Image (cartoon, rainbow, N blue to C red):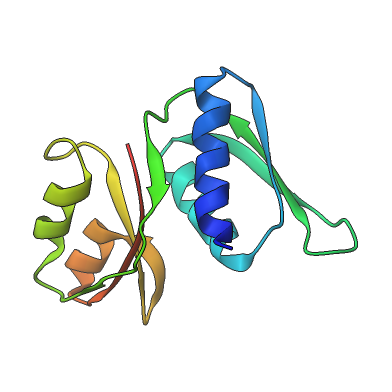
Length: 127
């Protein structure tokens, strides 16, 4: 069971159906951190965590700007100077979309990890 994969598919399907909001359950810290990045980059609007007595739920307001987003499995390790190779593999064009990575300094985009010169693992992409 891949919670991140299910959350990304749920976001994409809700966008394709032109829905105004998306409900992601069960919630996790990883999904919350990715939603924070998506919001910062302008792909989604506001989101909120709702406690349901179990793992919780995220309610996400959609903006209609996501063309595709997926979790990457397996989560490949990436050295600090290899991000451009992985961007070419998963993103349609240079400067279009974002590769999301997990590093020892937290979850961030590949651009941020490249600036900080740290390696990590690719976990998702969005454009």
